[in-house]
Length: 389
Image (cartoon, rainbow, N blue to C red; front, side, top):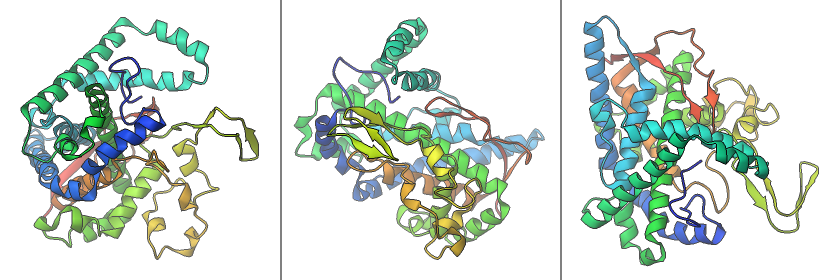
């Protein structure tokens, strides 16, 4: 799912075996620490400000043309890919400024569909081998394009150096920097870009939709966000907004960007899981969508109720099994970019809602009717964004 192999037997952080993952994680962990993220705040803030200005521009043009709606999934995707490309490669892709997908990102979105099929077929190795042979040549060409793009960008970044705080500047300061190969850098950079862009854009789109569909929740959140001054829309200040965090977690619960199961291999002795004996060597996993939508775990599982996540939550949520909510995974392979994702989403959605009143163009639309291939194939989400008074 997270990209092609750069070279035989080479895996980046996400797909490495346990020992490789531990080694690479020690090297990259400094780049994703809270201290590092606060140092990258100005970089992220720059793209968020660009997004806000882009919405103002779109609003002005649309108003002149009699259409006041904005398609936000596209803008969110531009923003998150530009941010992650800058953090990963030392330069943006220019999608937000150019208002269009670069061909490489368009290729990613199409190739992800085949990754979804591959995930299913891994349960049947013989079929997976057969399916791999049927993959069209153009998809295989996309694979080569992915590799060449990542290799070129990482090489340029490492050769040119940078005095800014990005992932590689922090890796280079790590005393273990020599414990990672250039090929692993290529593979990890691709994984970071995909894992940190597409998923964040999906979450922002889902969160916007749920807030627009639930006006009473939107009003509460607007009051919380607009209690701050513009220069207070910072990582540290937004981290303290409890209702904002509750809305984000509730959006993840209802619309998890990675909705399926990311399997683990039961290696030692086997185990009893849910009353079934699972032999050693079996891959097991729990689909996020199924777990989070189950009435066994959550009261009113299909409703957007951010209040369930507050410390003073109503007694009607007392039986919620919040421990099952692990969208960033659990244990030694939990997502290294969790803090970055939360900070990014808070900055983007808070800046949008501080600057604009947002409502759906068509309140009857069921935006959630989407296909899923490992990632959601997001529908357009058209909203009216009116500058806040």
